[in-house]
Length: 388
Image (tube, rainbow, N blue to C red):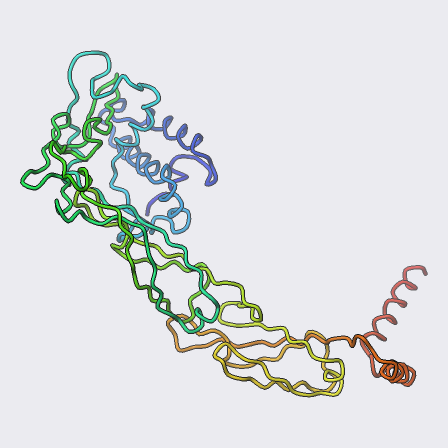
């Protein structure tokens, strides 16, 4: 079982980049194989430190790890995943130490850069395209019934002239002369062996001497794509839909990224949602609440639901209309609709209406308003008990 990445580096989950980098640098120096030759345990620890830092230094990978743990990088989940390449992390740490001294040359003088041999141009300069995000807002009615939406997404597509290679027709990319096609260069400094991205090919492992005239050597072109997106019934606010391979085209023939659609549901004028249930506040007149009655509400499916109000209904009373809530995503189940009563006090009374209410008040007893009568009686007893 893998150890938590934060525990591996000895940092808190909410630490900033500066603390994270300092912790990694300290541990990397302590467990570096060149400093602990022949110590297998130090080598294992060194790789664990590199793996943890490789994930946590990247904001997207760190966010995925915070949400899903190690599962975020299994079976292709959560991004490209970690490949155990500690050298790139070491290069990030020691860039601020050696600065321009590297530049493809071995620090301390003499000798050109050497190919790293572990990573880089093994994919012949191809890079995966970037993932794209598209924010979509839908109504509660659309979330209830589902919909098919047409969206336009600014993205990049593979160049149709060079077929994504980036090279002019009849030519092909060549192995980078600086790194020998590896994409990384290595140089030694004391007991450290530091690996950096090749400055000539920017890590691609190849160069294009004669670039394609249409795409300029990228192998891709900007375009707005029109896509059809299916929104299933019952989808909730904040849901993310992934469309594999619909992101930006890869660089120089690399695989395309993914498109992520983030859905938000607009607030509704009458209904509030809680999971699969819907809630609606309905005002009724004082006489309806006192004498009883019925009313109708229109549900999200466009049908009418009749609600019976019993005699003496109090403010806040809820009535349940079964099966008139939201559909449960990818299920035959449906939530319920809850109607909450709000009793409206009469306004703009005529003279006769006022007289009738005053007459009603005169002949009323505690049995007509048991809650208010009981409340004031309990309050009086409470404070009298405190003064004794």
